[in-house]
Structure formats: C-alpha cells, structure tokens
Amino acid sequence: MTTITEIAPDIYRISTYDSKIDLQFNQFLVKDEEPLLFHTGLKGMFPMIHDAVAAIIDPSQIRWISFSHFEADECGSLNEWLSIAPNAQTICSPVAAFVSVDDFAIRPAKSMQHGEVLNTGKYQFQFHHTPQVPHGWDAGLLFETIHKTLLCSDLFHQFGDVEPITESDVMERSRKTIVDYEASPFPNYIPYTTHTNRILQELAALKPHTLATMHGTTFVGDGERALQDLAVMLREVLVKE
Image (cartoon, rainbow, N blue to C red; front, side, top):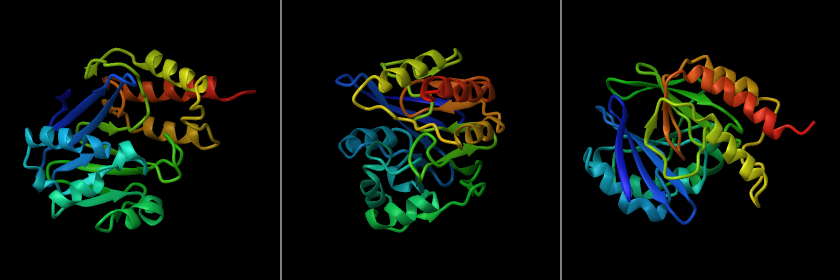
C-alpha cells in the first residue's frame, strides 16, 4: 500500500511499505512551477509511485529528478520517469553524473556543485555534496531553504511501518537500525570516516525544521539538534576503539 502525506508546504511524502523486509520506501514530490521528485524508488515500484504522483500532479510535468547516491531504491526507475516526463532532467553530484548516471540514464544529468541552488519556482533547493554520508562516494542531499526541509536519504533510517510524520525524537529507532545492521550480514551500512562528523555538523548548521528520511518517519522539530545527536550516535556505535 502506498500512502501520501504533505510533510511541509508543497512537499509530499509518497511511502510504500514492504512487509517482507519491514521497511518503508519513501519518495518526496515537490509541487511547484518546476516539480521535483527526490528518489525514484525501485524499478518494480514504478507503477505504484507513478499513480501516487498522478494524484498530486501530472507526472509528465516533472522537471527535476534527484536522489542522494546511485542505488536501486534511490534511482532504480530513473529512466521510466525520464521517459514519461520529456522535460525532466536528473540533478546529482558531479561524481554521480560522471561515474554512473550519464552512462545509465537516457538523458545527461545536470551536475550540482556544493552549495549550488536550484530554483523550482516558489522554492529554492541548495545542493550539499556529502561523500559517504549516508554512503557512497557520490552522495549528496538537497535542502529547501524557505521552510527548511532537508531531504536526507538514508540518514535517520528506521525499520517498521511507522507514522508518516512525528515531532518525537527518532534517535532510538535510528540507533536500533544501525546496531541491528552491524550484527547482520549487512554491516557498515553507514561508514564512519574522518569526514562524517564535519559533514553532519555542516548539515546541522542549516537548522532544518523537517528531516525527510527515505526509510521511516519524517521528523519535524529541532533538526539541528537531531543531526548533532546523530553524529554522536554514529560515532558511539560505529567507531571501534
């Protein structure tokens, strides 16, 4: 089942829960003069996500498609979206464009430099290159500057069919996810590097009001504190002294 929730003005969370792995997959649609889709979802989810987008806007009018890093749940159905939206263009980091997207996609991507701003009409999205945060050399995130929404990909990952939006702290859920991954066949989900703390502190300095995560509930509140707490938690769990 796919649900739709407006998590911030004109930003819609489109969420599909997979009970087999107890995980939500969330895409975020920005309704504006030049609509933006952040995360395409898995290729097999395209029909469901397409129908959800169609309940909000005409999917063919999507102008921008973005994601954090090159991975199936981030951009698996990229070409399907590019095919049905003839004016759509991918936006991603220069690394993502050079290493993966411009070979994989049916149209070239627009590379975004760190700090560069994309104007979609009423809203502006600042691109932040965040290598290995959450993971991937090519990783990047978008920050909506007016209402202060950070589209934060796998950061604050939570398992379960959780509520779409909350003002309650999600740190314990996120901690459990990281701890469980470390004890599973899939450790090192989020690598802790010499740059991790700096990148998270830079994101915290944006003082986001809404943290739109790909897996789990969207957090509304003190995003600066949440990101600072995330930096501490990741070091505690991942750094083996």
